[in-house]
Image 1: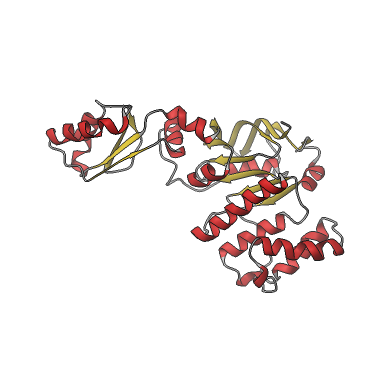
Image 2: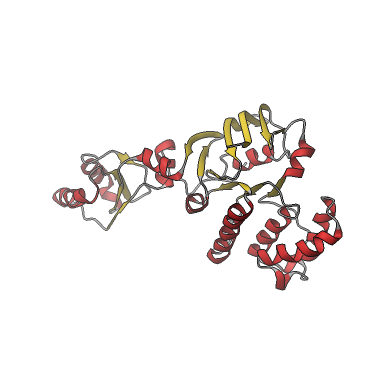
Length: 316
């Protein structure tokens, strides 16, 4: 396979803050690559460097065979970009913005007269094409941003947190469009997300970033296999957390969990759940709720970092 996105030792400082710290990655042509991590991990900073919007402090990167430092213009002709904070003029209509994007890319009017309506139909905005964007919902604006990124039919598409703030229906619709672009047109997609399900559903390979560093990389199946045993989570009264931890760690290694819960990797799975419950009962602990989960990408993140993915701070 041809590598179309590659980075080596990529670093970015903001003053004394190290936002990205030595990231190495490669993405093959035609791949959907998931870049998973909490807010503040450095995902958007990496995307901005790869799309030539931000210069690396050190390290190197190439997109479509072009160097991000010296061939920014060539890269911008190859890629489509839909960023979290895209600046869209609220006084313009969807149709007007599509035509403006076409002019910026030097696309003939005769071509965009056909392509514009097709793009708006593809993202479900035909009925709103002549409305001002300021009247669009958040989901509609994200879908318009996707259409704008596709005007010049890019070989490589960067989507930075594309479904943040969307309702479940809008999220599913955008997922389907990403799948269609990849399957029918062979578009390479670099997708950043903090949503576990999104990475699991869309990406053929996933890299997990935390505090500016890659901590895991592989297919979702490969990553989950590194966790091993399924996770048993038990909810109990707060006063019994210490006792529960003492009992349960006799059955497996403790895993990160949230307040009022204790979690372990239970090697024997379901066959040992009853034994754990009996041991807790003998110790005077009443179980409020329990669940046994197959390994997930959240377990992978917790295994690598010692904490769960949800509940993080703001992105740098």
